[in-house]
Figure 1 (cartoon, rainbow, N blue to C red):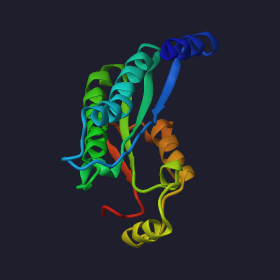
Figure 2 (cartoon, rainbow, N blue to C red; figure 1 turned 180 degrees about the horizontal axis):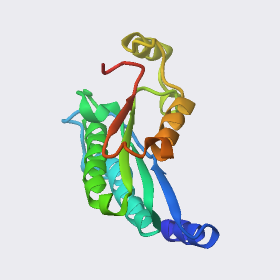
Figure 3 (cartoon, rainbow, N blue to C red; figure 1 turned 45 degrees about the horizontal axis):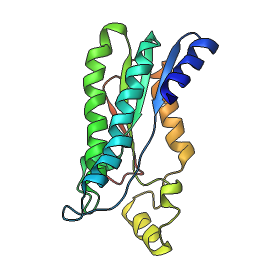
Figure 4 (cartoon, rainbow, N blue to C red; figure 1 turned 45 degrees about the vertical axis):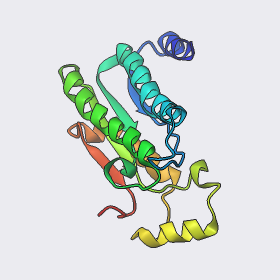
Length: 178
């Protein structure tokens, strides 16, 4: 119902959609042994299923030549002990982006993935200062990313300045995975 209301509102107010930036994520720790059906359903439900259904709806309202930016994570391409489910969901985001890029190319719709590293968002509000210091030490830039830096990268991927960037993954992690 929420998606129907959202896209009905877009249709009424704007007529068509040019850009979709999809960003959602839940990251809850669970080792392989601790992973439950509920844990899997929750993570894949929000991080993957909701993304698929939202993007599917958005494309129906999207102009040819539009742009889709899906928020992944560097966790989708690296070992992330204790967060295997989160990592798997973000790998799925990247995989869908590449597949949809090929499927939507005839309409000129570009699909890219933006994969941030550790970013100072509400996900980090509950971590200890010790954990923050440990993360900062692992990042060559020596700090967490800022949400406005991720937003600027998303804006770039959605803009006309990136019309030849398609099916790509832009990593924004302060050099952490370099």
